[in-house]
Length: 266
Image 1 (tube, helix red, strand yellow):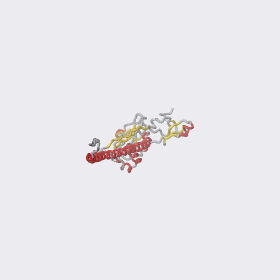
Image 2: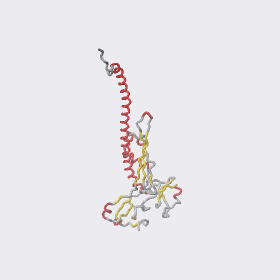
Image 3: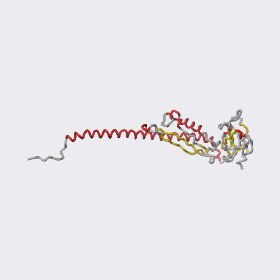
Image 4: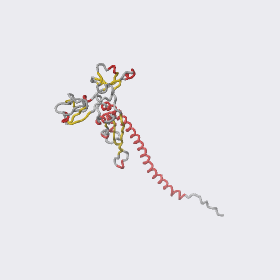
């Protein structure tokens, strides 16, 4: 009597033949999956690093802009070079040079920042590039931009004056009058850059003539000079102290011998 053969009986020869194929398949999958996994981890690390850089630059730009707003409130010209210098000081040159910012400290640009002549708002624009972790395509980078607006500075306020309910007025360090309105033209300097040859014939808003500033004009003036609408001096340097004012808010009762401004005091 013949024993019926089970058609499902495993074939050892076939199993031995398929074993190398299985191992080869696993090896190929691993050779593809592991690099992809490592690349994904690298991209995640880069994304975290990029976000950290953006937060750091935005924070430094905000702090530098607050400092610059004190100057732009008095002179409606934003010094983008000084703004960048303050940002770099806050971030630290060593940190920047070791970061993934393309060009390090020299890769940060603020030249598109400006002050709006209509509203007095400061528009801060910080641009830079980030190196991407894709070495097989050369040295690719992504352009990033941090942008925000900041209202003009409104001077130092005496909190005790506000709490006492006294009327608030504004004075300058060497001014002889007080101002009821912070936006008074005598407080808000409007700086213009003109050729020196035009300074002799030009007159200010009150009809007065312009003379050389004793603080910054030495010898022959430069090709161009700076003037203000209500000033009576022309300046060689935009950083001249004659173009800067420290505005303080005080109670009117503390104005003392100062009289009211003819422009903004009723």
